[in-house]
Amino acid sequence: MDKQRIADQMTCSISRLLEDGQSVFHGVSSHLPMIAMLLAKASHAPNLVHLDIAGGVNPKSGKTDRFSSAGPELYKTADAYFSLSDIFDLSMRGGLDVAFFSGVQFDPSGQVNASVIGDYDHPKVRLPGGAGSAVLIPTAKRVVLWRTKHDKRTFTPSLDFVTARGNTWRFVTPLCVFAFQNGRWELDSIHPTSSLEEVLNNTGFPLVYKEARTTPPPTAKELALLNKIDPGHLRYLEFKD
Image 1 (cartoon, rainbow, N blue to C red):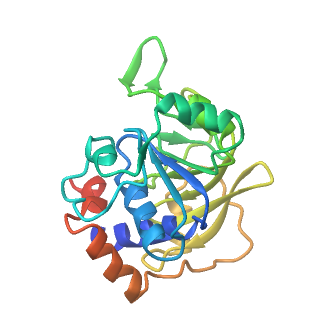
Image 2: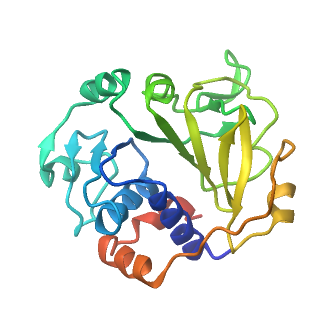
């Protein structure tokens, strides 16, 4: 698997989901959506409002080789400060257009598990938990999920624990993009680095799809902007062994 090519594909696919003028939030361990938001602002959505868990509003790119997706650089270089409690309030008032989240298990009905693998009281693995996802997934207008693994342990018929459910809209994986429609995930497009057979073989529940549409690959302009915005290649971090 060409991890760099797939990371670029995922970042560009996420960026294209964002529109000019939207208020968009990412949390911790969110380098892919963070770079995608910076790419969107540098290309087709200059008036996008970039909100993050560190409290920064529209942090500047240019030193992303030093960025954590929750570090002080996100407010030291920002236009303003907006606390996490304000994010929750904004979302519950209907003012948060897009929120990014991930997890470990996902079922076809859009539910997310970020809490435990196995029995809750005696789990095989205790995960970090949902943090603000139980508030923001039901209240943000659109929730975009991403995960850098796509296998049957990740996409399962049922979850060991339901951490959150709500306004899921799109899911970007290393193999494809899912769209949430008719109460479940449906296959929207397949990345040029994958195939319908690979997606089918690595998804633990039956897939609904109308056609095997191909996700547009990154353009030369997008790749040039990515290398300028993210010289430290933070978008590759989740793919490292």
